[in-house]
Image (cartoon, rainbow, N blue to C red; front, side, top):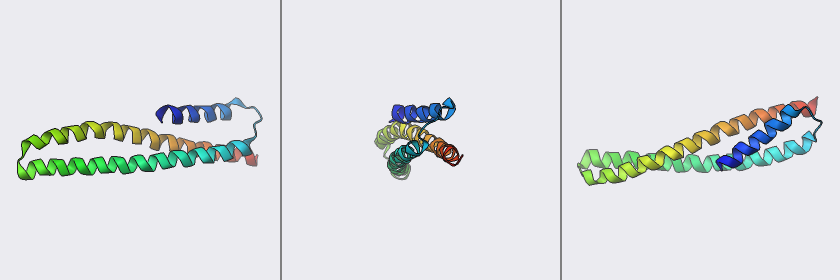
Length: 112
């Protein structure tokens, strides 16, 4: 997914910077579809990231409250998984925000 969203955003950046006459109406339609796909992906990753964060807090609480230290292994695994989830969600969030800016620029080109 990372490669796909980065490649797509760079493609649109290239179209916007090329200065060529493009069919901006069609590009806008496709861009809205892609934004929808990436928004869905972003929502799913937000839910998964939140679930892992909650499970991590619960596992830390179990260790602190019960003193059952072998459960630290579960906490460690959850922390290891949480870092890439946060990183991926961060990428998705930032790229979708950039795609909104591209959308605004495409609208300007259509109205011009």
